[in-house]
Length: 177
Image (cartoon, rainbow, N blue to C red; front, side):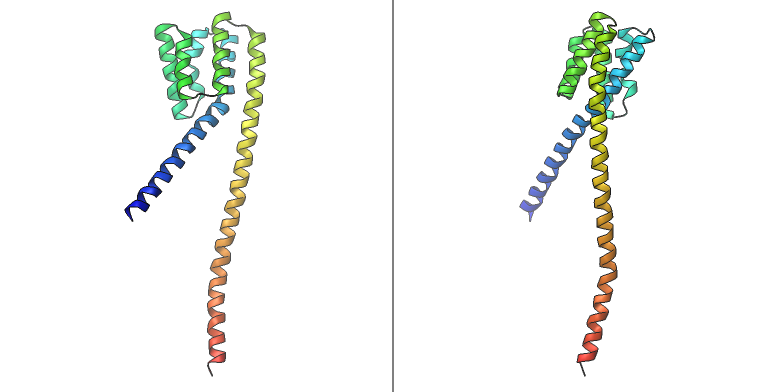
C-alpha cells in the first residue's frame, strides 16, 4: 500500500512539474508581445529605455513572470548591465521567445530607439501572441466540450440507474409468481 501511494505521489509530482513548465512557456509566449509593446509605447512617449525596462513588470499578471521582470528591472537599475539583467529572465524562462525579447530589448538599449527594428520585432511577437491566443481558445473549446460530455454522462447515469432498478424489480415481480 505504501509503495502504491509513493508511486502515485511521484506521478502527481511529475505531472505538476510538467504543467508548471508548460505554463511558464505559455506565459512568456502570451506576455512577450505585451512587454515589448509596452517598451515601444514608453519609448515613443519619451520615457527613457532604462525607465521602460525597470517598469515593464507592470504589464504582466502572471506572478512568476512578474517576479522575474521585477528582478530584471532591479538588477538593471543597480548595475546598468542589460545583458546580465536579461540573463535572469533567460534562467527562469529559457525559450526562443525569451531570446527574441532579450535581443529586442538589448537592441533598444544599444540604439536608443530604432523604431524600424523595433517594429519588425513587434510584428513577429504579435504573430506569436495571436497564435498563442488561438491555441488557448482551441484548448478551452475542447475543455468545454469535454465538460458538457461529462455532465451529460452524469445525467444519463442519474436517469438510467433508477430506471434499470425499476425494470429489474418489475421483471422480478412478473417472473416471481
